[in-house]
Image (cartoon, helix red, strand yellow):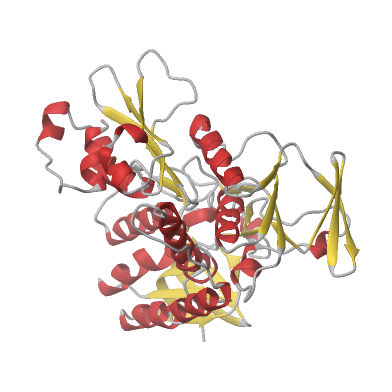
Amino acid sequence: MTKHFDVLYLGSGHGTFDGAIPLAARGKQVAVVEPDLIGGTCPNRGCNAKITLDLPASLKNQVDRFQGYGLDGKTKLDWGANYAHERQVIEALPTMIGGMMQQAGITLIEGRGQFSDAHTVTVNGATYTADKIVIATGLHPHQLTVPGAELTHDSSDFLNLKQLPEHLTIIGAGYIALETASMALAAGSQVSLLMRGDQALRAFYQPLVEQLLDQLVAQGLDLHRNWQATKFTAAGDQVTITSAAGELTTDWILNATGRDPNTADLGLEKIGVNFTTNGITVDDHLQTSVAGVYASGDVIDKQQPKLTPTAVFESTYLMHLFSGDTTNAIKYPAIPSVVFTSPRLAQVGQVPATPTAQQHVNLVDLKADWYREATRDLTGQTLTVTDNDQHLIGAAELSEQAENTINTVLPAIQYQLTPAQREQLVTLFPTIGFSAWAAI
């Protein structure tokens, strides 16, 4: 017997559950199809696991900066114990998220869903129909196609390393590449970073990116630009990477060359859903080229950053759309981004590579801030961008607390606060939030 739902989601990550739970609580009949771990990539193989591993690394670096300034004796990061703590935190999440969905009345269906038509999905031979179907299948690690690529590993493999290799080599120049490098350096590994081009973190303000790379090099990073692997060859217990620039032999290779949308084997071609190599094409209501079929989260082909907060916003928007709260098109807010290296790099809003006549850029060196002296956070800058009416329209920072600075100034950017309105926001003193406002 075919079971019918108001809304059926393919995938159980943030592109789904943040909106599906309140949608079901409003009385809608909701189903979620998931072939893997409940919660998707972010809780299980991404953000939550990464930050749990990173926090001790960040704390170690902070203690090391205070040597001779009130502390005596550097710390050592025990990666094995760090990994065990990460597992303790992460392993409970699928059950917790699944429990929240079931408590809200959501039907969880284990297996891989495939479209039979625009309102029908089959899972393990069973058939389910729905008025609306949301594709929220996310991304998977990009696979290299050069000879010997099977000798490399992906980010999930790294997050499951009980012990770090003595020499870790990372191929890539994005979030995962630099965050992994930062953690491994703190844990004492020799780290080589192979960048295909000349720029890292291309969506970020490049002068700050270059400062970040300089600091990672100072921490011991072996950085290679314009280095594209052409072959991987086993060399005993090690692997040799060959490129036009030369050869490098290492213990373990992380392929961090990006992530691709999970659009294969869903039956999208069968029902006429348009998609590209960047993801599924949607309109301004997140509806695909097929009426009644929507997409949410990282699987969408979009200009907005493919981040957890974006997926949460899209999932919540669809909840309001399906509940009848709105018929308006989605309007994205200012979405901040952060790279959890040590130091952090964060930004939000309009942060141009080259300012226009309508944009005024101000850079403040952290050494000018007494609070950064107190926290021993002296390398980096705060960048703010204002328009001709002195509205704050963008901000970026390189520092150990950059994410907190950007979170502090985010409301001013989102709501276009005037200088007089910003003066009415009184932050706690002495804190990083107070210093953030002072930099505007």
